[in-house]
Amino acid sequence: MFPLKKTFSSLYRARLFPLLLLCALLAVVLVGLLVAGITSLSICLVDFKWAWVNTLISTVVGIALGIGGWFMLPVMTVLVGGFFQDTVIRRVEAAFYPDSGGPVGIEAIAATLQEETDTLVDVVEPYLLKMGLLIRTSSGRKTPAAAYDHLDIPRQTLF
Image (cartoon, rainbow, N blue to C red; front, side):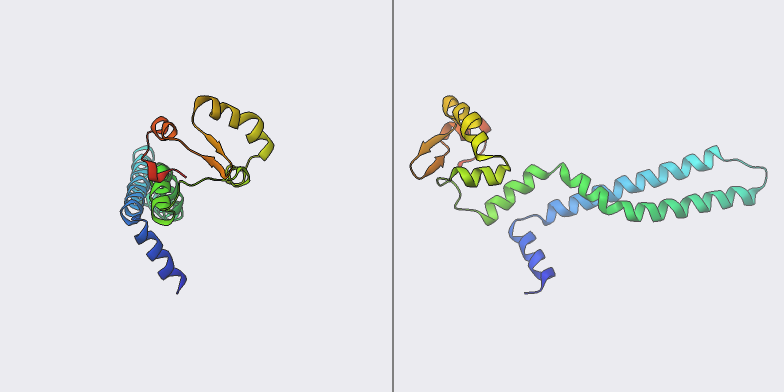
């Protein structure tokens, strides 16, 4: 399977196309507003006697902003996409990990959180056990219904 085809099929499977288009549209609008605002400011603030100098300055500013806006568009798309990060994470988890919810070992949790296992066992786990947000079993750690209620999320989306 070609990489581009695989990427599009993954986006389709996780239902992320509308979100991707929304991020791109918002980024285009933000860059357009920025370019229009700076161009209008340069026209208002720069007023020379000779019309050709005003035209030259407006043209140079417009070209510079157009090039800068073109290169700024991917960055703005990523920044706007950060606002929708929770939605993207939940959709990807629901699409690619539908069987989540089973017991998980402490090493797997530590690797996922990028924390030391000792820190989780000595500091985090006792607190979660005391609060009733974690159950320790012989096969691993599980999340009780209270954890889902506390996080206000449906049962199948938490791992």
